[in-house]
Length: 542
Image 1 (cartoon, helix red, strand yellow):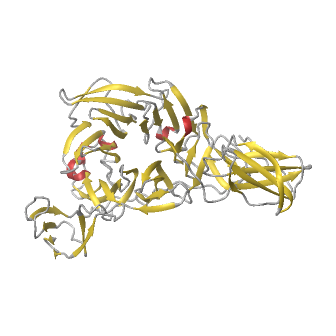
Image 2 (cartoon, rainbow, N blue to C red):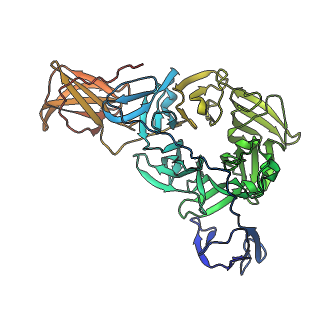
Image 3 (tube, rainbow, N blue to C red):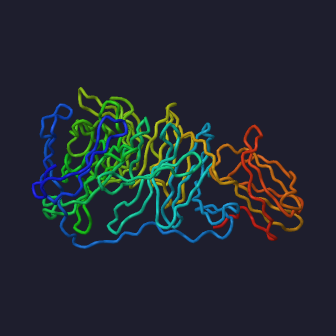
């Protein structure tokens, strides 16, 4: 590798984990704006000796001013167990405030659960798994100003895992964070960031079917010609890239840059001299077995099909240069989560909240005719005219049911194949979740069940929960005069996240055991002494 300014560069080779390729890591960096020539001593994949050249990005010019953006601010820990419209706290889980998902149309989900990342407003952000009654199954709060997106289950190294992005905002309002993989015992087993030194982006984290690679979005701010938009020739523009990363080595197997293929003038986002120009805003990646990668860009109102072997745009759906004539009702704007379901069918979450109409959001399904080059609306689901300025997704299940996360609209819906509402729930605005998924999951925490107890008027109230357990169906309560002398006092069915049982006696010590549907003991809590005061499990507040 030879730079036109910096000269020849040495480096090291790192073999891909599948041994079908390798990546070269230069020992030193290149100079801004220089041309780099890549040469090999032998042909690579049938190419000529000189593979080609590329240019190093230039630094952007100074902004007119900088604006510091503030991430979500957390509240102090809750002082008691109580339920309000906004959040719920539990006696057995002190110090944790869980945003309340209010269910208006319940469902049993057939053994699956909702996966959400509530954030926004004054309630701390977190990771949440919820059942069809809106009861938490697992919740982990995030500290400080950290938020999360895209919690879901995927397969990694042959095991079912939880994956998500977590991070915050820097002083320029850009994402700074990492991608996380957690096993079924709620232990983090891997974290990583985009390759080649780029910043991470919160919008996508997709594992390949083999679980050996990850598709993510990276970003950098470089100098770009913004004169056509009324800006400088070296203005600060955000270049976003889709990456496929080999998880074992960290090698970047594929990288596609928006600025290499889509002009800044294709954007519908207005230019301002006081911020990095976010002209593209990539928010989903859908790699297909055919070698095509489908990419959604919110700010160009378009979806792009990219050839993985060349990076060329094969076709564009929507935006200023659509390859398709958009049929009645097929137009979309500010969209998220574009997914191909066949060679001619694509689903899109259509935010649509763009001027001049500011129309309600829709979860749409389009048919693409590659002969007539026309896009036809097949189906559109809405939420009683709900407007969604940003975020959102649409998940089509194997049985034809459709899960819709309404993003900043704070709602989640499940529809039948014919469009009947099967489940409906909302967070209290402004709490919301970037996406929502309905997926099967089996979780067994390594930590024991949590217990709290209070005594008053000759009775003991026992509160117990096991955050993350999906197998617990019953609780057995034990009590006695000493830690080593406990006997069964009650056995109850688990109907909510936390049980609240009143024991008509005053044992000196109490403990609980979680049991599965076959009555087998799963885990035992610590043995505690009830506190000599009443502690309500739930109190309604205004």
